[in-house]
Image 1 (cartoon, rainbow, N blue to C red):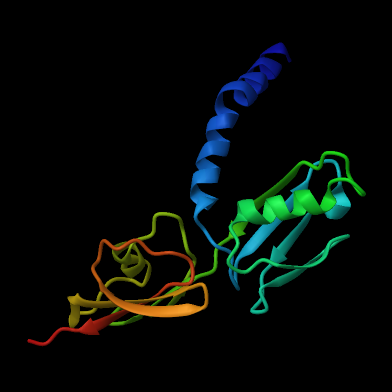
Image 2 (cartoon, one colour):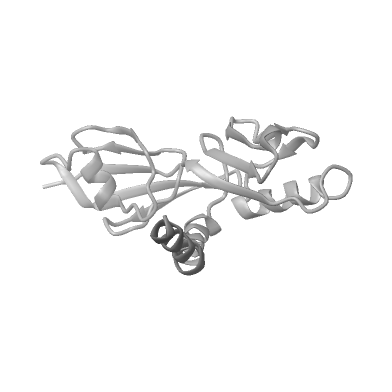
Length: 179
């Protein structure tokens, strides 16, 4: 039993700050949008801890705070809004964590063997997305790849390559090559 407690203590002292740091780096730049699934955990308050799937409205209805516009916020910004909202009247010092349960999918179309939507994973590139789509077809051009990315309500289309990093909600189109 002592060994178990020591190993658990070692985890909390040595490894937990690293785990939190890695988690924070992955979520730091991600802006929430429709299709993301997040977890809001309020330590010691199970009635305030919920999992949410964000819809197109970009608004959530949170207990005691009402409607909160979350589209375009980072998980850390949402966490701060909830802390500020709960602090004072309801809780003295709320301990809130907002984490990503599931990112909205990316989409890949055109000259891939299995076009469609795929689960986003941090570090995803066009090459990895093509692999998820069972590879490129014989006619695919690695020089004619286009990305549509929605950023704060604006869509932009740009020419990219196989090493381009993707983000949740991105749409990739791989055109045919001309021989």
